[in-house]
Length: 120
Ligand code: SF4
Image (cartoon, rainbow, N blue to C red; front, side, top):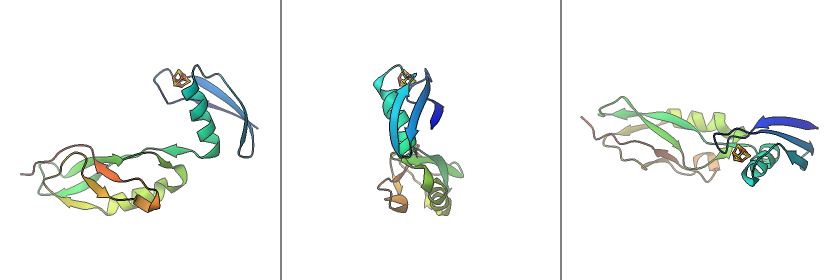
């Protein structure tokens, strides 16, 4: 099988073509560097994404504070991870890097704050 994808590892966005059979990558072309090859292989064998979202804050300057996954998670668990994020409510103050959920959905990845909220 053949699949085309734009590499997202840098802003250049090279158009990469991957030939594969099942989970085995046969060839990668169109990438300008090794990072593109690694990205393409991961997309075929174990696609992952980082998530950016928000959680509710009680007593904060803003009603929500931004958060993200501390690393990439398998694409297949994104929906479950979003459900867990949506359940979270925190009290101000919030510090950047604060962990809201440890090991979310057993991924080994945490949900962490990406901004401060000192509170009202
Ligand atoms: S293949 Fe390399 S140069 Fe091209 S978008 Fe990916 S990281 Fe950037």
